Amino acid sequence: MELDLQPLNLPGVDDSKRPIVIAGPCSAETEEQVMNTARQLAANGIKIMRAGIWKPRTKPGGFEGVGEVGLPWLRRAHDELGLLTATEVANAAHVKAALEHGIDILWIGARTTANPFAMQEIADALKGHDVPVLVKNPVNPDLELWIGGLQRINNAGIKRLACIHRGFSSYDKRIYRNLPMWHIPIELRRRIPHLPMFGDPSHIGGQRDLIAPLAQQAMDLGFDGLIIESHCNPDAAWSDAKQQVTPDILDFILDKLTIRESVETTESLEALRKQIDQVDDQILELLAKRMRISREIGTYKKEHNLTVVQTVRYSEILEKRGAQGSLCGMTSSFIRDIFEHIHEESVAQQIEIMNK
Ligand code: PEP
Ligand code: MN
Image (cartoon, rainbow, N blue to C red; front, side, top):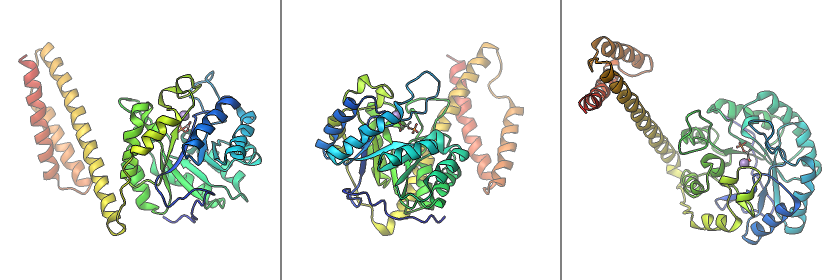
């Protein structure tokens, strides 16, 4: 896959040093909050400040951003503190307003990337401008849609392009607000190796405690940068309060990161191994989930006085999966073996429940 890319070339930012850090509040709230946060970030060596001006909200009635009045606040942070500024754009009017106010970097949010009409509208509005654009992954785990969005922006002549991995939403929320599904950004890197990649541990984790480990993981996977939400008074933030940290905590988190150099020649091998590790993690998680369901079935069978092994069901699983396996390019005997083992463990777990 070829995109016509140029280095991000951000004034005052040494992009050969990982991570390139973008930090700032989820939303610009007041001029005072923007400037207060900006001063602290700048004092800690941060060069690029983020702040949402227009906020896409799941339900109406939430804080939808201050809108255009907030753009001069960001410009002030730029002029007084030398910070580069970044904000989210979701339509042509946003692009126009942000560029008119001299915003340095634009990003496209996850809900927007998922919508090709919106992406095309933004791409058209960007034609003729030379501004770095960061495209977040779509909310759903669809790599092609993410790449399609990047292509639309690139086709509009934007060569200073990067992507942001912010995780994927799922119905079954557990630890993460948005599942990282690391194999997806890893595959994107494999396909478009020179596209700079930022990790967004704030939106993946959804809580402060997860920022450090997720940022470290992004660094270990060779990401180029991080975008992290930081607010002068996180608990009082008007949006995403739980996942924001003060500029000083951010500084502490960044200071603790271990940045490993990846050796050029083995980079692709490493990337593939990481991909295998991620897939193995998923296999384990799915097996654990299958066993949980199986134990529930055990309880049901116990309550209804049914036998554990029901042979018709068992043969059906082996036949069906064996045939499916060969369609997917594996031998059916290999898949049957695996499912025999899974079934064996499942039966053992059910027997334990029935004899409790
Ligand atoms: C944000 O960056 O504040 C934001 C709205 O993120 P996302 O598009 O990843 O949900
Ligand atoms: Mn946010």
